Amino acid sequence: MFRLTKAEWEGLITICDKFPEKIRHYPTLPLAFTEQGVAMLSSILRSKRAIIVNIAIMRAFINLRQLIDANKNLISRLDSLEKKYDKKFLLVFQAIKEMIREENEPREKIGYKIPGSV
Image (cartoon, rainbow, N blue to C red; front, side):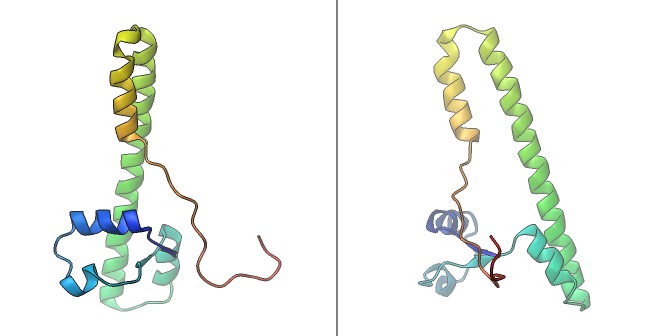
């Protein structure tokens, strides 16, 4: 589990305009589950609804992983095109790579910390 950054939360609000007004302006940033957190939660929650939601979330993670892999392929293809063509297209390639690249900020882990562990 981790806390969303302000930029991530604002992006989510922009995309998902169906959030109630109360949630949009809440002073604290929301927490989100990692894929492993969802898997662990599924071992605890046994209701029919929890199982259905868990499957939907796990499928979303799979789709996200496939999307990331597709971007890796796109980046490698751009690299090969960049080597093939002269420097006239360098600016175009840089702009495309900038749109694809997503930098992840280091996050502080939330939850129980085992004494003596890293």
